[in-house]
Amino acid sequence: MSQADADAKAEAEYTLKNTQAYADLYGSCTVAPELYTLSVPAGQWHYRVNDGNKFETEWYQYGSSDPKIGNTWDLQGQNRAFVYPRYSNDLTFPVYASDWRLFVYGTASSLVNVKVYQNGILRYNTDVIINQNGYQYLGLSTMLTLASGDKLYFKATQL
Image (cartoon, rainbow, N blue to C red):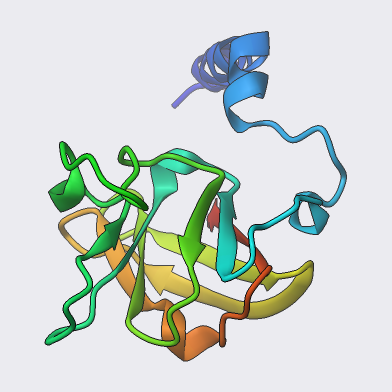
């Protein structure tokens, strides 16, 4: 690739991302978004991500009478409590002790850094390789223990 081609490619990327619409979708108005403040209802926890297109979460416990909840593809079209549109952000969920799953999306075979903050404190930091289907599955319940009023912030960064 020539220097002129590289310059043109960089300028095109800059032009694409240097818009208010891009900032509204992906930007943060705070230096430390993991420190967000919010009143979380008793018995629930709050879910916020840096990029809604990179995460989904779900809870399902085999053998439980409680239905699956979250914002994953297979829950779409169900109209009930704690079921949200795919890739949505700023969600509340009941505190269940186990069986929470987190899906991180990206380009197949790419490396993504995933950080999970609980009440502003970094609790989980790892690099994952996105599988051939464009996602990686993580057991959220193995990362941390949820409590009533928790505010979680999930951040995915392409490496």
